[in-house]
Image (cartoon, rainbow, N blue to C red; front, side, top):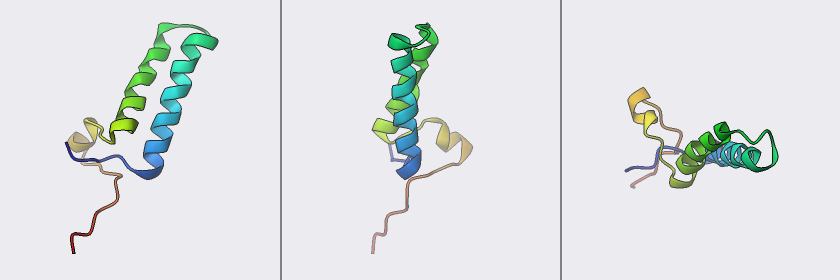
Length: 65
């Protein structure tokens, strides 16, 4: 599992995930807020399973030299 989520993408995923999960407890209290677990997990693990399918990668390239 190679990291494919980086930088700003990771920060936005974690923020959106936390906001959605918070809405379950303090907002409209609907179960739809639990969908926030997905962006939160992908941000924390730095891996999105859909990025390889779409050919995307927001993680900066590492120099091996």
